[in-house]
Image 1 (cartoon, one colour):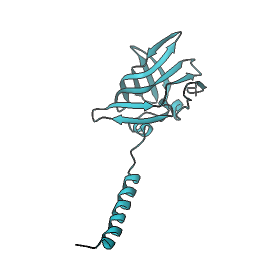
Image 2 (cartoon, rainbow, N blue to C red; image 1 turned 120 degrees about the vertical axis):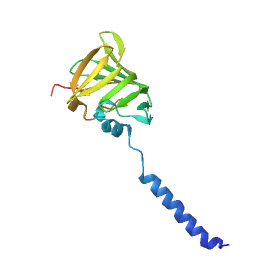
Image 3 (cartoon, rainbow, N blue to C red; image 1 turned 90 degrees about the vertical axis):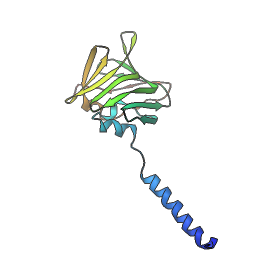
Image 4 (cartoon, rainbow, N blue to C red; image 1 turned 180 degrees about the vertical axis):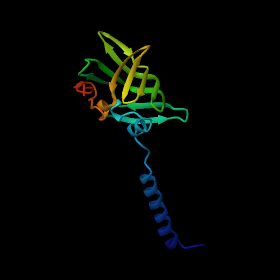
Length: 156
């Protein structure tokens, strides 16, 4: 049986190697996952605390708080809940829950986002509005508990 003085350095080396390997193999962020499916990361505001992506494309994104953002050019107010769920595949987010838009004085759930060429189509039931995907290159910032008024979508 090897002496403790010979096995301790080997054990410490293996533990250090294991820690280094686990740190270097970080999972991609939720924003990187979105980009992998053809979406700009800016369709999701900053502040994601965790996410889960299933083999069938089902996903869950968790945020620390609800977030409201005003889309300056259109005047729409968007609300992102603490929990956002749906299904994702290349160029398509379906069965969305947790994202809504205020039209006039009523909140409607955005149930689908589709990328067609360089445009993103946001669906509320059968109705949609499209915006250039280049307007969503950066993730907007939103403080918990307050409304943020930012120029999230412009006519560029």
